[in-house]
Image (cartoon, rainbow, N blue to C red):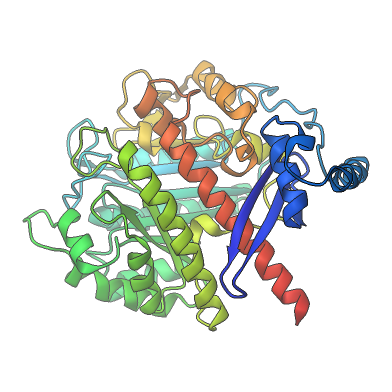
Length: 454
């Protein structure tokens, strides 16, 4: 399988004609004539009917055949089955819902402003310890583990955050493990003391900010109904300055109210924020903030504008990273990871404040997806197997998709919310993923070409 696409080189005002070999991951730059031939082949059309000179077409086809023989084009699918696992399967990552409560009332919140589908509550230490004990017990020989402290807003339960990290450090020494803690926070209660603590203890910190003040305040008010931007921004900037080169992301969400989201990325980058993520909201089409079918073309065009802004900024010496344009084609995820994705429900689970276990944070309190409880030590291995059998080798929609190794089948929770089927990806999300991947590949190739000229 191949994918031929164009990418605008805004620095040199030209088009790059690229073809991706899906199975090997090789990317080739073509001239326009060879690109037209490749595109016809991808679409199942006769390359000799491409309008090109017949002799030239045969020369192109001969070059393609040489690349095939080198294993760099039309490579066969790897003989690998992701779902051939023994049970119980190891768990290497866990999301602890430290708080099912929040001090914001975000209008697009998938977690019902922090309480999910239950009552507002905070995680107690007996639950947290039992969850970490389960992670250790199910981690097998895996040394490096990951724990995400999540909400709602986890800083509402900061004592538990400290207790969880302290207990985790004890377990590291006792069992020879390394636990990388991550926290996701809206930064409203991020005091100087808490900044110092998180900077020291967290492997990664995700801070929520939607971009421009007007955009952020419309959709992310406080519990009292006032805007949160003026309170949050100083905290985020102070933490980012403290964080230095350590891992962090300032993460936002765009809705149909800011389809010009490049302006929000620009706003954040001008504040010297170097790690930025801005993701499309996932909501029922009935929501006033949903991205609907009529918005898709606008979003795709905006990703083109965003890629141009990224390239021009970096070329001007103002480097920043946009999460969805980040690719490492040489040292990226292994084949197993690219096939199974985030590992939700298999290698990764979430634990609610009352100890219930779910496939991931977005499935919390979702009927039919409870996997057990850490306090009773029961665990549904059959549901774990169901999720393990949900991957790009089992999803019909993914098998024929050229971007499958980059998105790994997409988000199972989004698939469930959209289609009530974890094996049927959300179509709009797929469209956006393919576009972002083209942008990411184009940026990657262009920057490598430019670096070779130096």
